[in-house]
Image 1: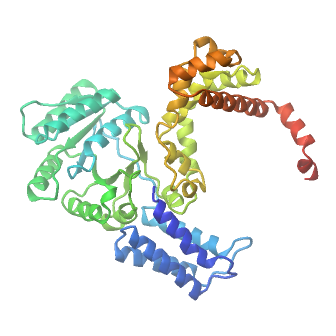
Image 2 (image 1 turned 90 degrees about the horizontal axis):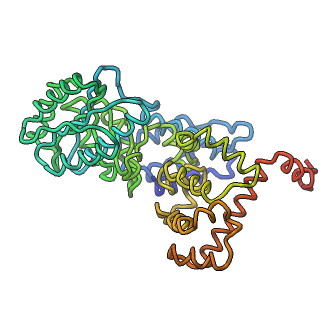
Image 3 (image 1 turned 90 degrees about the vertical axis):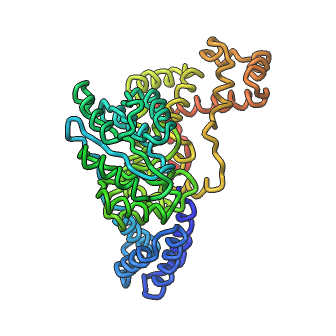
Length: 445
């Protein structure tokens, strides 16, 4: 996510390395590089120019604070301005009405229908709502079928009217159905076209006026850069929508849409799509995104994702097993599944400060655990519970059954044993004290 932009920002701040004070000369050189980085990311020229001028104005002549280098001070100023550029504060969706009606708009191919499914999953899992999805794309038969499949996957009912080509009627009837059947959120998926045209805008305008939604969300493909911003402006001029959804932010995006769209339409980015899975949807936090763009990671989001998968009762049982040295491959597999539920592995690693740059050219497959799972799956229940039983003949059988080599099995067993020792060491406070006491470096402190 934004790897190229991050790299160029880091390169720009190198100009100030070793300087004792921010001066007009060194800040001008840095801002020239920052402006170039923004333009390369497909940010509107006017926005890029105004942004760098604001940063320059705040930075000029500031003395270096105690223990703060000029480069660090400039990063802080830039981070604050990036946060403001993207909206400043996180803005939640309005779900106050009963039912709350959410209208989804955007061009064909922007990811509206997929986002509708993701939003239903978010509403159910994070907001404890009972959403009704409404299929109002009456021109593309695949859109209705796709929404039905997505609804089934997340456990949300999909309202359709086969043969009815009037999206206004369908939407109005769906709201009446929701009221009668206890649905507290109605999400209306509408038709899009390949480009903005009068016919489409008239139709979405009619639906909008008829159902008076609490939220109108404009969905845009972030990979289209400045075109996305221009399309957002055209829709906002007509619909006056409430927020923006950026899809495919995990793809080969340069970041221009995320950085420009708020300034152009003066509407907050509310969600970002970060993958194909139905749980790959994040609430947009401008400050956290600014951190990621500047290579600082996003530890807060990483912790939040971990907490969502955290089961307190399971954790207690696991701690006891670790203390007794009975942690086995069943527990190991359970931990892998919890990590996988947190999202794309490369995206998770990118949330750790400094890791984004280190992983820039590293291809981390989303199925990174596939071989490990296959090897564990080839073990018998007895072997999973008692790894010490796995001798040479068992290793060969496990390797053959998982399509791996004996070396792969040996490597996993070694890694598992090292992990088990490490976890036991950290769970044993007495062992930790002894380690510190016997460590000559610790004694020096």
